[in-house]
Image (cartoon, rainbow, N blue to C red; front, top):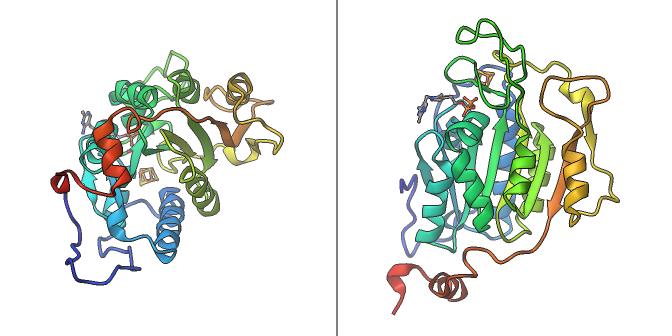
Length: 292
Ligand SMILES: Cc1ncc(C[n+]2csc(CCOP(=O)(O)OP(=O)(O)O)c2C)c(N)n1
Ligand code: SF4
């Protein structure tokens, strides 16, 4: 694991700066800037509340969103495209006291890495999975992913996408994820949802609707965003499915609702609870090397 900045044993806890000097290469106006700002606000406030940089690990893969790794000064690993979840699981197993955040694109998560997603949700791995959903493979210049709408045309698909996208949140819920949420790429919403997710033990899945202004622009998504009613019972699986089903990702049609907020949240044994060695490390706040 790449340590971006080390702390000596006798140095004081850092309440520090998580900025990096890496030049920004996102397109001006990219919604990833909103996500980055929300994520940084969240980590900064955690550090101010007494957490140390060494309590966190971040992981991303290859893609426009993957660059977020370079813009946040926290330890972690920039891994292979689509392998953000198994890498994050490895980090968590290596040190279960770390709070691990995986940043993934919709291509990485729902195309190349989709099997990892299903099993991370099923195992209730205690990590936070954040998907920047722009409905295209943006870094490689806009090819369709499994979430791109029918009719979408690019150089690889000149006659347009012929099949319907699948609904990623229905997949995540069906795989028994215990925390499922969606927000729009907005600083405040991102910060809010991370604060909600941190209260939950288990696999936290957050979809962020992040239009790509170059290859999959915002065709009015914002106008279709609806906050989930406060009265929604987050433990009701079928109601969660119903709210998720209000938008099928196949473009935007009259009557669609892109619901945002927490669809589902239930308690279930996590992968850590099932293994006494891991449980012991968490209970004693120790690392493997310190075990007797
Ligand atoms: C295993 C593998 N397959 C394909 C690629 C090529 N590749 C690199 S980035 C990328 C697109 C990433 O798309 P997405 O995950 O949706 O993120 P975005 O760029 O849209 O943020 C692809 C296909 C790769 N690097 N590794
Ligand atoms: S190509 Fe799209 S996702 Fe990538 S940086 Fe530009 S606007 Fe953002």
